[in-house]
Image (tube, rainbow, N blue to C red):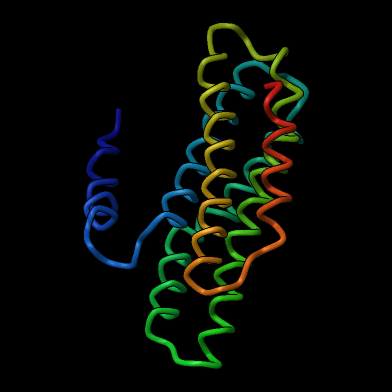
Length: 171
């Protein structure tokens, strides 16, 4: 097995520092990526003919993965910017979080219906992956709510994402 721990060390050290970046948005992007990777693995072990679903999940993960760093970069720029540049950057940061939440929703819609097809020996990994997607959406809600307090702009997606989470409770 590879020494993956060393690859995470720098990121976790940065995340634990008293700095604006990386923060919660970046961490939620990591959680999304971990969850989708676990779901991909479980589906590859279990599903023979669902390659399209696995490919769609890989595409979503590839889309979100760069956001791990981009979220922090945008937030750092927001904290340094003056109006009107700040307003544009706040919108860019909000769009990133909304896109992440939408990606979590798409990944859940692709994978959750396959639950009954996953082999019992790997179902726990699949379930952890689904839980990561739920945490991602909760993180998006928390991020948008925090931004509403910090920047005075409440996103309509807060309620949208809360409603999506309610639908997911059956899984």
